Length: 401
Image (cartoon, rainbow, N blue to C red; front, side):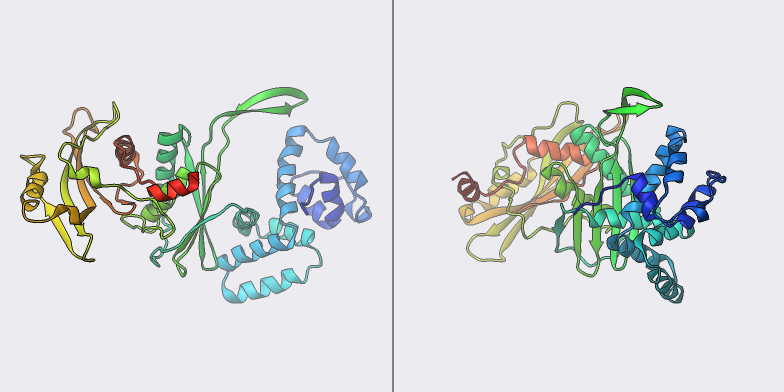
């Protein structure tokens, strides 16, 4: 059952001595005789509380809500997990024994907030993550150490910001906060959401106030399991890009390993035709795209492959000239195209030569493009050219039936 917060009930539950410490540290209620108040009967305190200015009460109420949330078994577990990471083993064991001897969760949470505030932020984040029920797991990742240096964290924030700004028009700013919890690495990302208006009371006046909230993306990585749990309440299309951003920025992988559960496939057969046209967006800066390499796999003998690669500097269709030559001696209907390497000429700066971007697409659903600003434009081109991965026709028919 969900717990309901009210500040009056919070005062009832909290020992008077700790309430006195909290308020006196802020220079408040020094004239109140906290020891003389009956425990669980904070009427005098509550009356004084109501006379405080609204802004002052609001700031402390937000802190009380956090302390209230952490005043439970799950909150205590989150506190212990954060403290274990920050303390040495002997000190941690003694500290946990001392904290466990305290009779109530409210007293325990307030003591940690007052005396061990360095553990508070991480514990709050862990508790929040523990209350979430919407997670997607990706396995099959290499057992690589997660990089948590400032450069890697900033890279992840930048990729998230760029992706949402490009695809949804939000995410102008983003911050990522890393925490370690036992053998797990947590990354809490907070991109900027669309501006909103909220109905608020401010100093007794009712108004609609614009503000810029954040939405959240949470990554939980296990090096031991080679798995990544992702929490994101948004478009399903963003799930794999977010996983890929993490793999690139934090695990330093060239590309996201295939997901065994992903049934989508790239249909690369159209790229066997020299006449295939790529469709870049107007204003994307993409001048041309050429096929540099083709890999053909035998339909009848597993493992047999033919790779065609050509210098396309002078002749953009050079690889197709090779394809035409071998098609005279090989039954091409016995081969599928399973990988293509493309080179795109993209104008990034108007006063500089076009940049050459090389990337590959591999059957069934792997693409080496990242999710930075330039690669997102190339991904858009693949979609417009009808080269995005799709569910197999028989599975689509089954769903529709």
